[in-house]
Image (cartoon, rainbow, N blue to C red; front, side, top):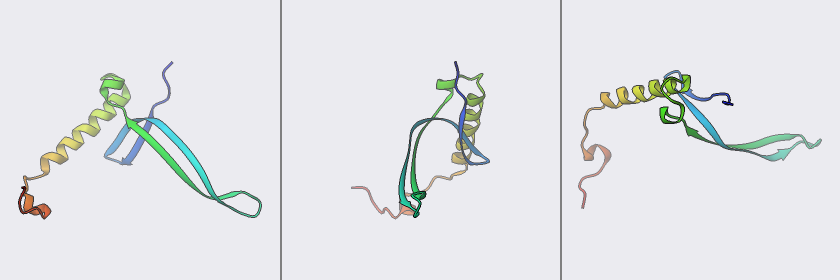
Length: 91
């Protein structure tokens, strides 16, 4: 049986299907009734591609849209020089 599709949404242009690989909650501070008032959450995810989901799957379409947007943004970058990054020479 196929599980529900989990999505990680960075913004409206960056939506990726993911598999949650790890999740933990560490309660750090409590009130006088021992209710947690501060906690840390750790979340690990793996992006699912069309290799994982297939081209006909809704998650596969979302991944391809994300990947195409990344390629479009990369195409907007004009080639830079190393000195633009503060590197004068490579030895």
